[in-house]
Image (cartoon, rainbow over all chains, first blue to last red; front, side, top):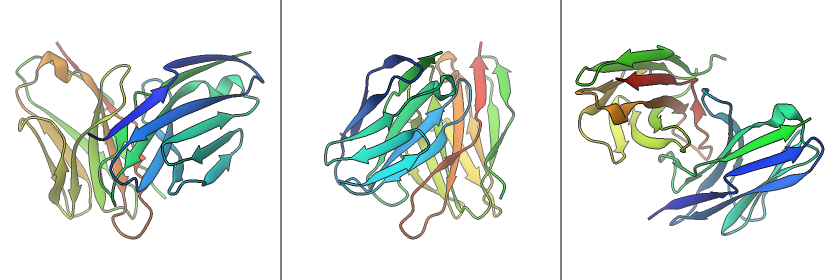
Length: 110
Length: 114
């Protein structure tokens, strides 16, 4: 069964304290690994897609990386406005439905 | 470029009733997927529509049904509502073709069943 697991479930950081969120996946033939940001009560906001092991993408304080078994979302010098739930999702082929993890709830304290 | 929109924003229904949720896909997209997100969980796939036909379905009963219209907008219908149907319902649109698989989500409809 295709599965995506995120850790930790919740993370509390001081402003400026860098850290990483983990997403491990067990899928038959990964075609794409997606990261989304979700604010409370709102829809997920697209951040990155990674297609092959070794690929990296960056956006402001966020950098996503991909290996054959997991992906990391690195947050450098976070600010309070980075507080949100970060969701990881896998696609096994084409435009098939995304398999989501439960998310990591990030809180950044000023 | 217009993003994904959903209506209504919030909805309160009674157990046993029926509900219709609506979604307008992002400009240029031809595929719509619907997801259910319970509190504290990741979104769960309900079904997907491509060219007005259902193109895949998750582990949801037949009382969850949908439509896609020629302008690629979509509806999600849920009959015989149950308390467990209370959730955030998300619509995502994408372009089926080529190498890019990004799905872009709307703001969601919060459904409460009492």
